[in-house]
Length: 142
Image (cartoon, rainbow, N blue to C red):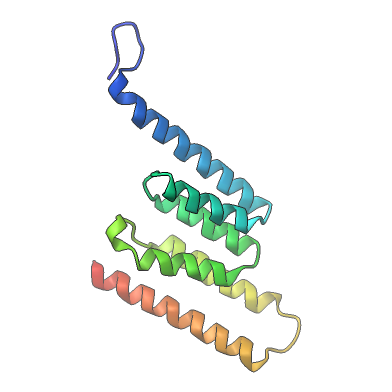
């Protein structure tokens, strides 16, 4: 609510503070991703959620991308799993975050210099099953 003197009304202050906090979190998570500091990115996302910043899909996507950039496909899949298990928070995984998770899995394949062992193949299959389950859950919700 704008005031006659060009200021902002007291009732708009919390919304402006929330928007500024969300923007700062977004910028920090993006920077962590560029530096491949996935733990810091996911920690900041968790702190933002604990500090009553409403969960935000863009923050989740940026944190998942930070995990992907750092080659942490398991953490990336875990982010998707959390999103799919918490529809009550008003967040729903979208094609972008599914793509990020699939890209992290593709990075795993392309970065592998040695032949895959059975354990790696089992992990790969499990990751694909998680993605398929999440995609089915998304289509069921719609």
